[in-house]
Length: 382
Image 1 (tube, rainbow, N blue to C red):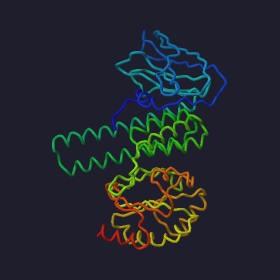
Image 2: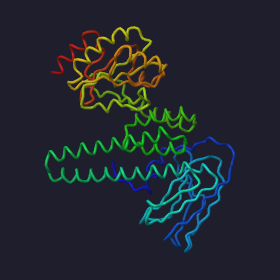
Image 3: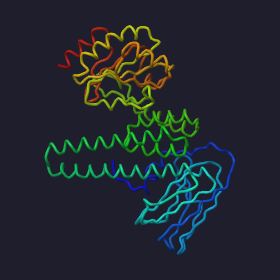
Image 4: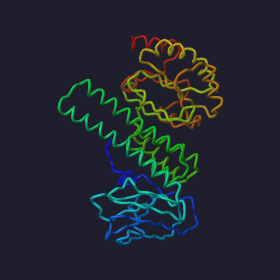
């Protein structure tokens, strides 16, 4: 994590954007307002183009003493735009907005960027509120990391270093949760794109992919579908043929739980984790569940847990099976049966199937069925 000024956030994530091509009709938009304390400086209106290419300058105006400006432009699609002062190396003045309405007002002072206001665009107002809170959390993380770096560089007190590391991790987790909730609650594809790109600063790529897939399904946006497909292909290309071999890192998993919250395998680091692939419709899986429950009850207080990954396609059946079989651990699924992303990632040819992961995230055993699971845990966990 690095502290990044609010005015620079868009530039970080621009390469992941694809235009939200959901509207075919052209429309005229008007952006007006006042930029204070910027006399004789050039204000530019820029469009974030298709496929992450360089931004396009649509118009510009040299600000007068009163700071008033007006931009009229025609656009075919609703997307992301930037209002910026050209060559502003001091304040890096830049405001991102979405043209979801035809008349939008943006007022600002480059020297007090945090106080800028947006009116007339509900999506842009929501994005502005998000970014202000995001910046506050980001600064707090940066402050903790600075303190931590100073102590580590000076061989400071080990207890204090450990405390600061936990504080940093908790703050990053809180930031990710905040961003995830914003993505899940957003309905505008352009805003979702921005948030997904921003999330890549601190989240696992596979977690971003899960969020992107969920958003694509919710909005039916072709651009979000393209984004998710591209990111998924990138992840798959990084998976080696021996990805689930014993002694190798367990591939990341990031899917939604029964309440829609994204859960990742990496979030369980520090514990022994049985990744249990199953389904409510799978008879052998249901017959195996009592053995898994027995092992869980015996070792759950000894640094061991289970992550259930379902190949169900019916949420109600999935939830009923969890309850009926007393599977009292974390459960996730994308409800796509054999089309689930985990099938190819873990090369699953049949279920039940499981993978035992050590506290460092390394695969240490597979296919632990019947008494084999408890026997293996007895040897590993005292």
